[in-house]
Picture 1 (cartoon, rainbow, N blue to C red):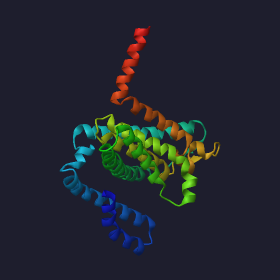
Picture 2 (cartoon, rainbow, N blue to C red):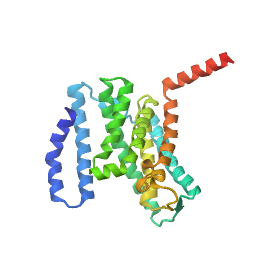
Picture 3 (cartoon, helix red, strand yellow):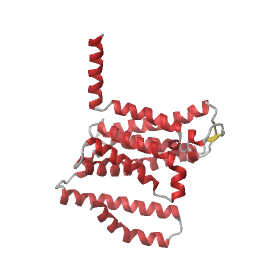
Picture 4 (cartoon, rainbow, N blue to C red):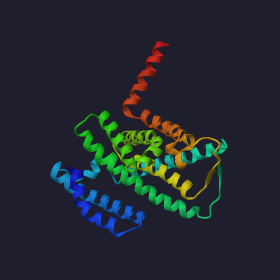
Length: 270
């Protein structure tokens, strides 16, 4: 019902933009921006009318406090470091060559702004609204997997040939969706860490890609380094992301208790 209402409000405004402008990038920015603004506005009414909650965003984990801000910065650091380390390792293996760029300061700043926007928007929609709606009716495990599958699948709203060509990206997107939910649950439902982690990953790739800092040597096939240079569409990216995913999964409260019990049993057995 929420999505139907949102689309009914958004389409009459977005449709003229599609027909009146020939600039694809401008159309995407305007229509997606309007969709997200409509989403935020509708949330206020949705919370009051449906759930009798006046602070729905806070219940999603969007809190303005020091802890959430520090966790956002921590996630940003982890995501950026992970991405840059991945490319550094590939360079050491001789799979790519680093290049200089005169536009690096501008690219870094632009990338940070874009990454924070993407991390905030997708974090609020998928780890905020969608996850909350699922958890009201289903178990945490089902909510985790459904939200992550939807997150991955919605990245493939594109022509079928392009879907087939870029489908190797799907496992990493699914794993990323799981990781971001684990990051939220590991911080008692706050959104700072998952937003920061996602933004850090986007920021790192933006710097490398838009700044044209690397050139691949074609010593290994693209399915290893990533189709179109996108690390999420390659085996190396999946391995690095898997390591971060495992770390966040291990830090979940239930997993920590389980690990402690296993260590205690091992000591008793010895």
